[in-house]
Amino acid sequence: MIAIGIIGAGIVGERIIKQIQQDDSAQVEAVYDTDKNRLNYIEEHYGVAVTDSLDELFQADIDWVYIGTPPNSHAELAETAARRGLHVLCEKPLAHDAQAAQAMAESATNNRIHTAMHFPLMYSPIVRDMAIRIKSGDIGKVCRIELHTVFPEWPRAWQQNPWIASRDQGGFVREVFPHYLQLMHRLFGTLEISAHQVDFPEDVEKCETGIIAHGKTQQGSPFLLSGMSGAGQNELLQFKVYGDEGVLTLENWSRLYREERGKTRVEVQTEKTVPSLFDEMKEQSTFLVGFDEGLVVQRYIDQLLQ
Image (cartoon, rainbow, N blue to C red; front, side):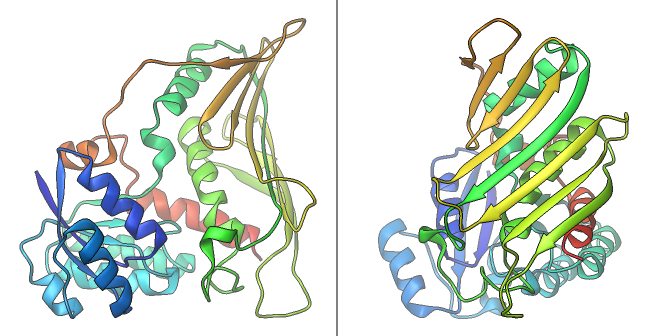
């Protein structure tokens, strides 16, 4: 069982704690957050040990550090953990820009630690099923890949905090797009973004409100990325892979649909089970997304937000 120290006990950090407590491969050894009220809540509701300082957390009996803080703090925390010989699990995006992300990757290599990023799609049975179908030719030759994201409001109601709507750290391109850019990179290889348009509000402190981008995969398949906030509809996330014999649509993270000419779209079900993130961390599986791959995704994000 791997022992994990948690830095950042916000909404996503709390979700990680829940996941760990439901998993036989890992345990929470210590939790730190600058918000003392939040720490008290976590201690009371989850029965985990909390610490008063980062030094105290780094000195705990842990193998891994989870970083669930705002992006501009990732690099310093990850490099500190690396110097202490602790492996690092980091939230996406890897950092607030590619320069900081590269420093994180280099520090991990120089200190010979293991790294992982929290990309839940990689440990989803339905996404693994989607990947197998694409690779096996179930939908024929891939003709196009499209990502469509629509948010009625940003930040989302459950995600209200000072930085998530900021231009330098927040926005849906940083918060949501990395999941799908990483999946596209893993499935189709290097992505070449040919052109993009990003819309920002007049307030220079606020994040993007819309984006459209297109390019080609390593195999030459065209892709289209689109996102917008402030739309008059419910939130919708669609990742579509068009083949000449069928189309696969991953909708709202966890529902997979298949359709083909002349037939009604059907939802794909799977009874497969796959190892959890913590199983993969323990085994150092090739399914883990390390800092090197996170750096690639960070470069895509930086390009999109230019």
